[in-house]
Length: 150
Image 1 (cartoon, one colour):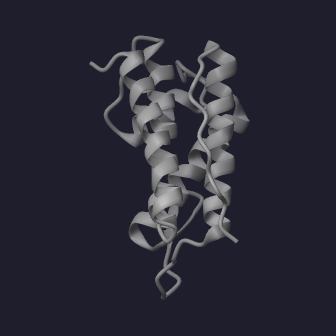
Image 2: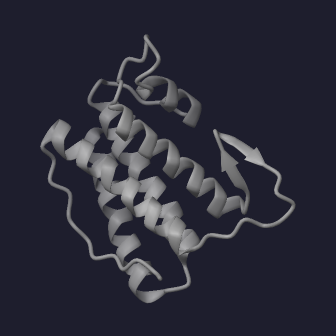
């Protein structure tokens, strides 16, 4: 089982990767959005590890953190949960070129590309998850410099 420190180390590595691709590969919006999600995923997994838990599927993680599920053992705030879910959906869009609404793939009949507005949303949602983890655990996570496309 991965430990809290392992997940935090991976989240930090992902943030550094995000900074690097943002600065060096400016046409990599899909990878930037995907990296935002996986950074948040490791922060959420670190949160779960604080409770001695580790889940193998996205569905199991969702059940554990969902603030609306009465039996969720590791509930997070509604804002953080929504940010995490939006990152998940944005990363699916970026990886599979599909529109995702309410956790469902919507067939639009065309490839759904990733644009600057999706990158900006992903960065905003990632910041929400970073702030949650910092507030909850007083963890210092290295800051990075990211440019938002226009």
